[in-house]
Length: 133
Image (cartoon, rainbow, N blue to C red; front, side, top):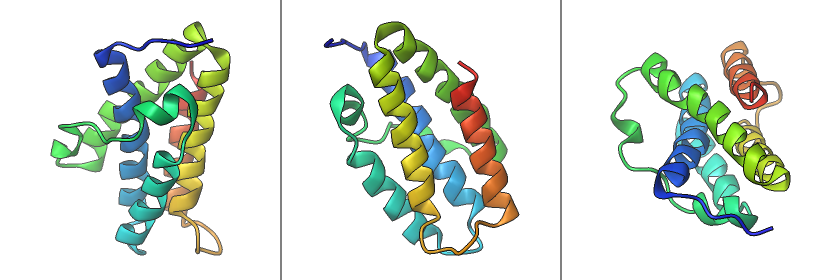
């Protein structure tokens, strides 16, 4: 099933996915945030399907948040909204989006033997927002 997403829907998906990368990178800032962001970005831009086409570029204006809390206030609801929207349109694309975000989070932590408590907690919050739909 081919789905069509409005510009606003695409912006919400981009805010959610790229924002999740920003959140997990901020949570792991004690490590190598640049390397984490690069790995997570590669994961997002490797997504396929409709989601892959949407996530090829990051949203404008996402990075104006001055604190992690302000970013989370934007991103966590966008994750839930994205899953709700995609589940209504195409369950396979909803699953594709969820997997893309979770792979990006995992990629951001690649190279660490065990994620820090801060990274683990942020990953839990991101996963909970995805599952709240």
